[in-house]
Image (cartoon, rainbow, N blue to C red):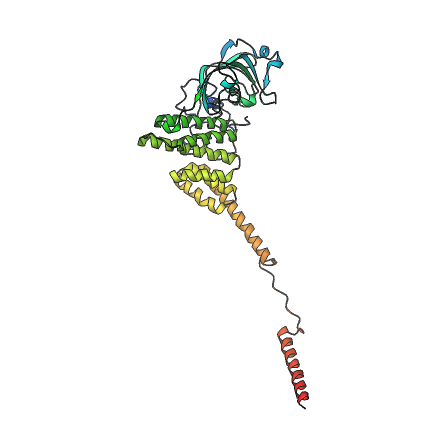
Length: 408
């Protein structure tokens, strides 16, 4: 699921004191190795003057993680895998398997996508070390709010069923792992019991605080996938967050709640543009940047990314004034300076190539850079106009002679 991540902020986010579970998108944020260092500009923090050392996304930060549980799980992964006939190969690839421990209430009791489900969760490594225990984890099924292994397999659980899920690292924390308790490329064994499934709340009936909290959870999940370099799932999470924010409402919000919703929306759009840029979806990224600028014309991140998108499309003439506008807002910003200088040079090279092409279209270019003059006609050559006049006179004389002869 992951191939790389991004450098993170050292600031402590507002969710740093919450309980740790596998649904928390920020758990992967503890890794300190910077990823994708080729990205010149990712995110601005409100109090930063220099954009050159910014975290990849809005509100990314470090999160405290609990110490590793020294107790072993009741059933080691090796013991659970002794009877392969009882395991269901969920994806047909052998990377994700499910085994029923306690039967449930029947196939008709399985939860549906879009429902909010509550499960009891216990996660262990291959050596039996417990890395997660949550007696009541709630998430929206099918929204990728939790690890893919959990999201995919809970759809197959019957109400009251307890099952083991054996997952490859691809559907858990991938090559990054989760510092300090889950190593890179670590497979996990999840023991899951389905406790409850209910319809998700009606978005139209959510009050301001509930809608803000829900949108932020989806956005933070997108940040997690962005760190894992899974930009498709990141885009999916940001899109869900934007749908929550833009959904109609039957509840009146306060001006403060409206302003906070707009702030979350701008963050989602900026991070969405960053993900789209990673996938070279330039038109989509340009649209996301323009939506930000409709709400905040002076948003530096959106201006920078818009300039970057146009530059990637070879539209240097349009990109340069946009970057100049960003630089005017942050005159001391070295990153914008560097990007603008690079674009100016590319634009000059582009004009030089175009000029050379036009010269070739208009004619041969001499040593002095000007088209060579046509060679002079030979001295004894007769201009075609004279030839034409002489021919006309001769023909006229012949015609006159014929007329006179006819009269005689």
